[in-house]
Length: 366
Ligand SMILES: *Cc1c(COP(=O)(O)O)cnc(C)c1O
Image (cartoon, protein in one colour):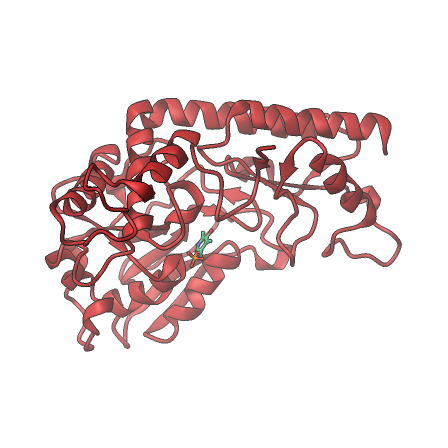
């Protein structure tokens, strides 16, 4: 039986994308070769790369000075590529410390220059996004994580700052409409909301590049990748292909329709949590994520359990939900409880099944 996949990443992909990817494994674009064995210099693959980059530009309605790249090394490699390319040793970058990945990005930047923590919600276990922050006009850039995958918070507003803004959109890229041109650098590992693991999309305003005086290895230099059109070495061809297929799926529907569906899905799941006497949401309402819905069963805690680990009632619900075909709802290992990741490809019917399982569990098991 096909499972209902709530894993946080690698994550659910649209059924038609999986079908098309499957076909390309035997015969890619009528070449008589598999996508896994075709040359990345073949005209068929070069077209995939060009079209994927062009679709990102189109879907995000990007200005001409924005360049789109498909790189390797995951979202995590952008944690150091960003400061390596943007921050001199005597300069300061601003970081919003709003979650595990945001914190990781901040720590890496310290290897390259000064880091100023503009705000932090670490003390309350990242249960909200601070609205009070301090960002200096003269800082080199501000780094944000638009959706905090581990804790389930998401920006629904943007800080107004004078310096360029860099955003890690790994877990909510292409999930909603926004003015993408207000950001100077956007990056997203593909495996959450746009494809298979192995490639990372980077959108960069080329005007912010070329201001650091350190030597940058070619493979880590955005300018080299722009010049080489994301092909200075062998790209992760299959991963790029899956992103290309997903981008076609996104483009066909448009971000407006995708956002509306995502809002409907999240609203009904949060409503089910809020009217339950058993399940409880774990983050501030105003910052609730449309992508990663975090909740728990606080009353399931045994005396002495601090909630950091999963409790026995929660374990019981995971086993119960499995009978409905539900997989991947266990919270991040340091957080506990549940996390239901409801990315773009999760159909509304999948969320309905989860809600049904929750209601049924509460009625019969708790
Ligand atoms: C998963 C994730 C990352 C890390 O991605 P990798 O591709 O595994 O390196 C970074 N940032 C955010 C917001 C994430 O969700």
